Length: 422
Image (cartoon, rainbow, N blue to C red):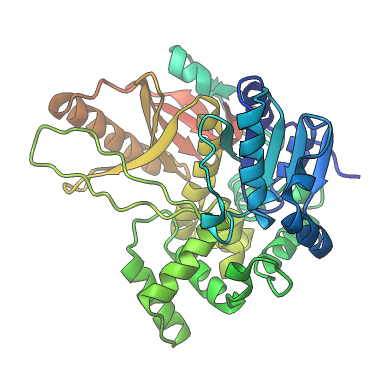
């Protein structure tokens, strides 16, 4: 029997059920949505077989029957259930009536007649962060960094680059958290191999897609991971790598499906109001919901990353962004990247609703890369303070794959990912 791990999102679910009629938990397959939702549900309606799908389409009210909080699992298979939940809340609004879970958006969004604003609160769930999987010691609190000046000094000598490479390839899938590393990687491979099995899907949008094209596009995305590659660049990459045609419409259609399946999630650019001729490059950074998908797309394993430190740097950045997104969501903030036409860039800018912000560079580690990251952070801080209305950052950090945690003389924190928590 697999061990149960507490999830960060459960704190948010508990809070939102006290202030909204329904909560929607959306995220990729096998990230733990049903398990987390069931911690709060007193009854569950699972839309998981063809017969249940058929019966629910004939009578969507079937999905609403049960003791509350009542969970409707994989609601998107019968999109009309959304409308009935919304209608029920309009008639008799009670906090914490429903929990909806879904691993994709509906095939036909026009079947949803109401957006659910004010009734159904959407929550995005990710695979597990290192702190959730108990693989981060959590000695450095993201929350505390936003509220206090803290001193950090931890040699962190028992965590290696090889371990970081393994965690990057394994991912944060609950079923893959296993003492046997070889088994863990095999579980992740099985997950990837089953991602695009849509032959028996009730969702025509996915059933008519070709798995080999999904995988071609994912390979291109993986080759451009953590970069601002244009869609045109990736289309050309697909053509050259597979010696086949790929028109923009087909590419866009498959790309939209990958987003609907919560497999890829780009990071948008941060555009502060700069009082100069400097313009902000608005191209998003290409990211996955979990880096293990990118590794599987290219057939990469831990030793492959160790053997190619340059590529490992891009994959580690994506891996770190996953954890940063999870920790940031608990603070009610958002994460973006920064790049201007002068070439100055920052891997992650975390902004809270109260206006506080932090700048983070993501590097594998080592004195040279840390020094380079620090120089970019200091340039960014000075430029924004001098030429924009943005206040100075609450803190700046270099997030590393391994090595010690400490605070530099210039105030920049150096923190390995296995010491970070919310």
